[in-house]
Picture 1 (tube, rainbow, N blue to C red):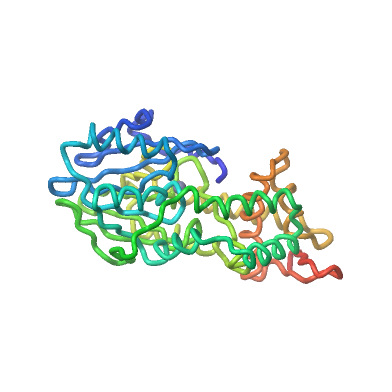
Picture 2 (picture 1 turned 45 degrees about the vertical axis):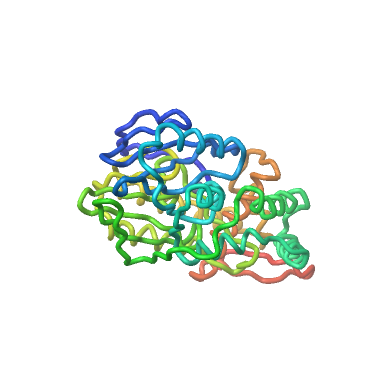
Length: 347
Ligand SMILES: [Zn+2]
């Protein structure tokens, strides 16, 4: 994820709640922060009044610290209302990490979209030796060095440790569904690009939009090509999702995102995120206007500061997402060089 800043957004709560201490951000909706041991150092969890209990939206990662926060919350601030169900917006560890643990502890139903549920299981069994071999071949062909490939493999294999097993069955929700939580009716929306079928919830009566990671106030959500979908177009999916959101959700909705602060100014932020990606595309076209280059060679052109292996691996996924998007639009072409490695250039 990279940082961009919207000048026109409005933040009703200037500072986030302390880690582990929920505050009421809208009537009957608690906003909770949990810390993450990554560069992105927090995730927002929401608790939505659900009859005599709380529906929980997302979980944080599976680590000892996060389990202690949940135990403290369940015994303390949340003790008067029981958890009713767990809705996980997408398969990333900061959102679904403790699902299996929380569900077992509290006897909850898991609510997810189908691709995110199956994606959790798929990524938990990564990576078998033949997958590691195939993915390494792909990354090598794109020009990544062994350190960056190592970091990517670490991320992929690490998923298993940052998550718990999801239960063998779940309640599926899909775009177009209505989900009733307590007295509220939420429209279910889904979007691709950052994840597969990321779930967002919109309460039209109160103009409240639970956006998960799809629209964040300060960060441009990571949009990366995965090695099992090397020709995939997550950026195209993401940009189409942003356009659909601008149609479906009013500009003056109160946006409750999974990272950064809740905000007003949805359409401005959507426009800004789209512009950011347009600019990235233009930067890539400018940067490789000469000789055809390996996809990995585009990373230092886009990110001139020195990146460590981890940052390189993420930056590479983003760069490739822009390349694949432009290949589909006919703005770039790719051909294998004499060494069999893929080289790209503007069309
Ligand atoms: Zn996230």
